[in-house]
Length: 190
Image (cartoon, rainbow, N blue to C red; front, top):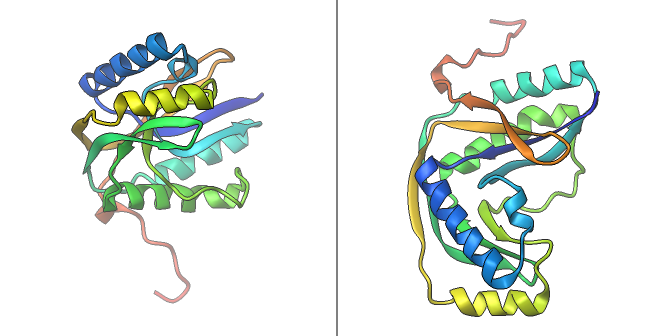
């Protein structure tokens, strides 16, 4: 058994549709298609390969433990890039998304699923990458330099997508639970 999972935020359908329209425009005008193979999402935890049923059970148990969070508003605002290979919509960093990312990382840390040298968390929605060549990247930046984009949505859950060998498929949504209901760790001296 081997499964590839992605932990992410999926915006509501109206926001996803707007972003998908942008990705289609970019793909047609600049002949870059790689981003269309993935759902519109904000990555919370890099894709991980799970190789056993017990590891998968531990993975989802850890994610359930990370879901004690207050709902929060997420703003997607304008365009940005990682030069010269990725073009994206910026996601404002707020305490809600920072805390959620931290909780997920902390809960999954004992499983040692990712390498230690991970990049600093920069929430975003990718519009073009991988097949984006430097010369096309520069054209894309010029095309979008004066464009604006802003969408706001409530986050009250996060999602897990599973790769079926060809595409990412929605697998599970993990709704937030009230932080006040989180079980306290047991101690010897109560």
